[in-house]
Amino acid sequence: MKRVFSGVKPTGHLTLGNYLGAMRQWAAEDQHRADALFCIVDLHALTIDHDPARVRRLSRQAATLLLASGLDPQVCTVFVQSHVDEHARLSYLLECVATDGEMRRMIQYREKAAREQRRGGSVRLSLLTYPVLMAADILAYGTDEVPVGDDQTQHVELTRDLAVRFNQRYGQAFVVPRATHPKVAARVMNLQDPRSKMGKSDDAGPGIVYVLDEPDVVRRKVMRAMTDSGRDVVYDRESRPGVANLLEILAACTGGNPEALGGVYESYGDLKRDTAEAVIEMLRPVQLRHKELCADPGYVEGVLRDGAERARGMARPTVDAAYRAIGLLPAAAESGAPVLKAAR
Ligand code: AMP
Ligand code: TRP
View (cartoon, rainbow, N blue to C red):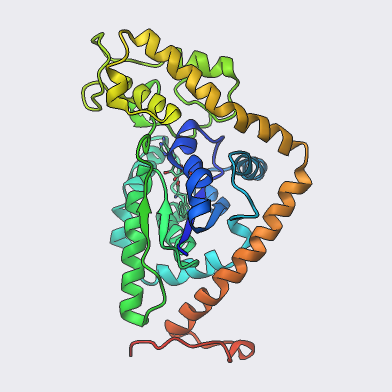
């Protein structure tokens, strides 16, 4: 059976972009077709200015929402990254394989670092090394496939490069993974700025639909979405990004095709109305289940405890083997641990 791994950062409330680009496929498909792990990657939330209490709260909320969106702990493994030491352990080894130059080329690093510097803030070193930690998340589990939104493609490419390089230098330690993306809505755009991604943000962002937004709030945000000059409804990402985004969201919610849907609508108003209602209907059961789960925090905690234990059991042998392969002496207690046939 294939191994699938993916993660979500507790840096803000989860958005429609997270849901359509990632979580929905995890629940509907990935957990059933593979041996799948889904991780709340809390260490990654510390790469930017953070408030400890908020990270704790958002981590709990993300776990609850993953379960509400349909991840079944009987079928897949749901856990919190910091509960499994192997991620940080492996990250360090991979830092010894990655180069400074390739880290500085990461688009997300460049964008986020530039934004931080414009604000006069400082850039945490962990923001630079973050894709290495992500590679460790993936490689520790012998992952074959990484279901993510479009924005993570470059990070998964880096993960592949590091796996291949490590294997060539020190012996076959890692499976080389590949990214998979949803067919529609792999990049949901901000409703007020359809040329940039709908990302989690600190404010109530009028262009961001959150998974937990009330129906009225969803309706208001979608009805006020920025559309393009021109009046006919056509699907063209380049010249009509606002309309294309709405068509993609509608298509993703209803199982349709964005181009075909373009021909159905006479006006932007009708398109917005139907899109809003489709989003509301799609989110309704998730919100309901979220409310039920919030009433039972002990259950969620138990799921995370079991998940971490299972994850630890899977990651430990892979990471131990990589430690041996790269030349680190086993501690006496583990001297019986299997040693890789490493290249000399
Ligand atoms: P993050 O919020 O960065 O932790 O992302 C968690 C998952 O959601 C990743 O697989 C992202 O690629 C995906 N994702 C985040 N924002 C979007 C978006 N606007 N459109 C599609 N996928 C997204
Ligand atoms: N970097 C990813 C994001 O911002 C989150 C992430 C961390 C992840 N580790 C991962 C995704 C491993 C997939 C696999 O969305």
